[in-house]
Length: 307
Image 1 (cartoon, rainbow, N blue to C red):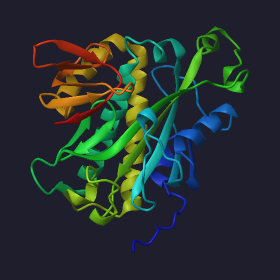
Image 2 (cartoon, one colour; image 1 turned 135 degrees about the horizontal axis):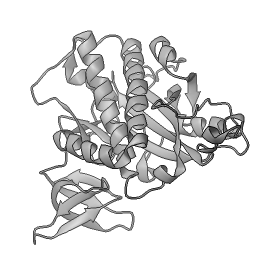
Image 3 (cartoon, helix red, strand yellow; image 1 turned 45 degrees about the vertical axis):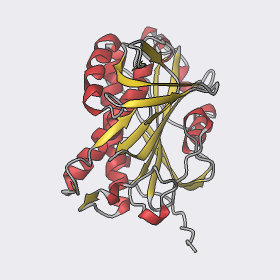
Image 4 (cartoon, rainbow, N blue to C red; image 1 turned 180 degrees about the vertical axis):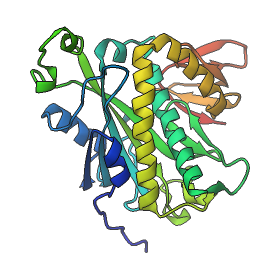
């Protein structure tokens, strides 16, 4: 019989030094949902972006009772073993809703996460057990290691409250932020799960592939701090030059896109499927899937699994 793990309020001292605000609770339904509620009531600090800077606020929990993934999927995690943290930022509504560009926001969250995990491992001197145990991204929202799911990413748009102090224009510079929205990036990572606690046969945990990791609490805080830094830097650059950044992100994704070059099956919300080779990403971050007849198809919303 597997004993239930007790939740404790996350301790994130490094993250607190660089985030605009850190809210940590032992348990909540979902860190994304808690962040959205706090944005709605004005209790989560989301500074306006200016002069190439971007504020990032953090909502963390040790246990989620209703963790969510894309397309209505559940996210199952274990307290004291899995990092469940949401990162909230403020950005222009026009950019967040631009279908030519907003697909790259999810890719940014994935690249930020890989960077944060790799930087934390380098900091502590942790090394992969095998040469092929590299961290990759399974389009559009999973962190993969050795062909198994190590983490999941969920980005959601949240409307800012009307007439909040941050929205009250005092001059022309403030007027430029009147149409901002909030984006919340929920990131769940299996950092220290033992093999017996993995939720599915297709999931994995960082400690199963890497030696030399620090205690879970230290690793969670280090990764979160690097995430804050990454979101602030990458999203500020994306706001300043979305087209240029999209081109650069597309090149970055070529090196870490787990699906590229593999035969995969895309499962759509209407129950239909499409089988083919994942060729790469389009300019809008959608997936290019080439079927056996040589036809290239664009996949924008689907679960993609390898055959």
